[in-house]
Length: 74
Image (cartoon, rainbow, N blue to C red; front, side, top):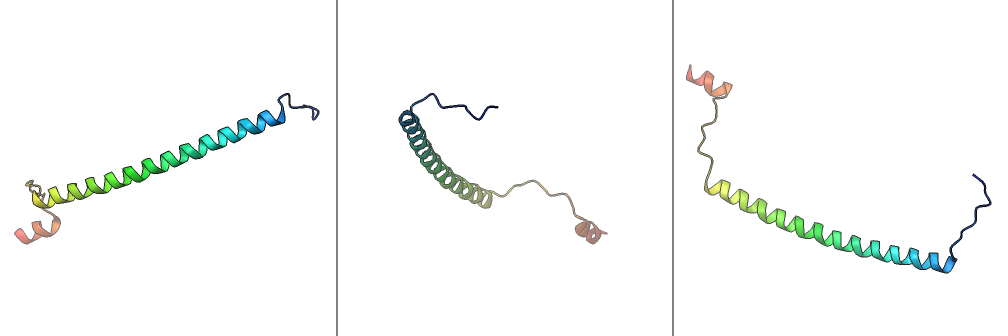
C-alpha cells in the first residue's frame, strides 16, 4: 500500500464529524448505564419478591430421600 495516500476530506470537516460521533457515543453510554442501573434495581425487587413468595409458600413437593435418611429408615 503506498504511503502517499492523502486524505480527500477537509480536516475541519473530519474534526467536526469525529466530535459529533464522540458526543453521540458518550450520550449512548450514559443511556445504557442508566438502563443497566434500572435493570439492576428491578432485578433486586424481583429477587425480593421471589424470596418472599418462596418463604411464605414453600414448595409442597416431597424431596427424594437422601442417603442419610434412607440409612436411618433401615
